[in-house]
Length: 484
Ligand SMILES: CC(=O)N[C@H]1[C@@H](OP(=O)(O)OP(=O)(O)OC[C@H]2O[C@@H](n3ccc(=O)[nH]c3=O)[C@H](O)[C@@H]2O)O[C@H](CO)[C@@H](O)[C@@H]1O[C@H](C)C(=O)N[C@@H](C)C(=O)N[C@H](CCC(=O)O)C(=O)O
Ligand SMILES: Nc1ncnc2c1ncn2[C@@H]1O[C@H](COP(=O)(O)OP(=O)(O)OP(=O)(O)O)[C@@H](O)[C@H]1O
Image (cartoon, rainbow, N blue to C red):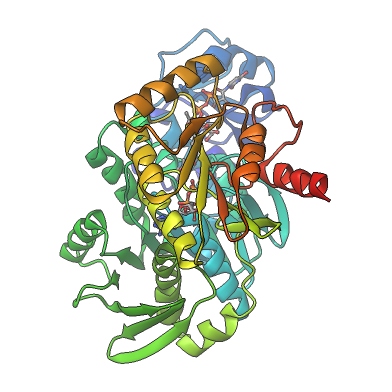
């Protein structure tokens, strides 16, 4: 594609003055190692590396044009464009290079602290049952045209996301939208038909610093709605209420979900797993297959979209009958000697509350909760999470999650301090080897008890443990084998 075609939609072309606009651009990358002759290289100042340090490598590899935020480096004949925001520029260029793909599909973005993955999988299932082919880009995997690949980020880089959008021949693309992705312009140039907000809870404050900053990051998704795009907001969440008010003031069509009298998709009551809803005057029941109040919200959010697309609650009920659930989201790993082993990806205080309450819904005798905190991540959520675990479960075992470079001994000391700070004395233990912690739980559990493992979900262990297993599921299945 010629450079002039690539930038013709830009409002200002002054940055490109002096550059040959007739040049052919054969590809775009922000990684010097991937530059091939004729490609355009965008230098990004990152958290780990600075792409500007690799500009000479990119030129040596044959880049036709280099774009960056630093003053012109000495790179011989290779033209250089100075821009204010390389990340944004990367998204804008990719949008045109990959054919404005999101403009021509139904694109649904789901953001919020918790429930993104679950809501996305519910949406995928309900849409496929309605006959739509559906791509999914999220935390667990990327699924494009039925082909699955490993997820690198919940929201991938602008380059990857535009490439996947173009590659997808599916009618719908569902995107899990992280606040990191939004603030890093990974979604620049992507437009949405539906944008969903599940909730905002205390998390990622190592990155966003304050809840207000975190909220504003999430709110950026709603600026990316197509002109006739719609917002779907959980207004039982106070941040959701705030967002809905803001969007309604801007005349953005907004579907509100919640118990509030004013909600467009009103939640009336929950009996067991069944949810009674009022969709603009018509009261119906959704026969859910999912446990827990949090999943009432997730299902209501997905249903809000499906109903708006013209499908009935009957369609939702028929479709839910064979919904298989989601790996590591309240997943039963095994039942050994009458003891249930559950894996859940809860990593906030409220998620833990929902998760442990869900086990109570299953009529558990005793609940043994095993979890840990990630090294070098938001530490302000640790005390409330520990207090919640101790209050709602019968026995808490603190163990290792990903250490992310923190020494195990240091994390152990952190745990000891946390236990002291939270003034917890009984029914709590610290066992740093995650596999041994699970084995110890097995020793004390009785038939009818539940052992709940939170934090890791289906993810592989980053650390090595005594049993040599690589995930909570493998550990539990190994214990089952050892038993018989
Ligand atoms: C801190 C952070 O968010 N980093 C993300 C960011 O990396 P970055 O842009 O800072 O990249 P970098 O590695 O410092 O490199 C800078 C530049 O130098 C270039 N480079 C580097 C080396 C070289 O030889 N040549 C070269 O050109 C790189 O290609 C890059 O363009 O952009 C990358 C591409 O989009 C992301 O993969 C990467 O995610 C890292 C791996 C990460 O762990 N991020 C987490 C915090 C995250 O984003 N999480 C959210 C989910 C959060 C949730 O649970 O809700 C997510 O969306 O995944
Ligand atoms: N609507 C919700 N409200 C609060 N907690 C929830 C909700 N939905 C799920 N959870 C809890 O959060 C955990 C993660 O759920 P899910 O993967 O759907 O969220 P997520 O937003 O995609 O998180 P991540 O991006 O970290 O994967 C679940 O295992 C459950 O404990």
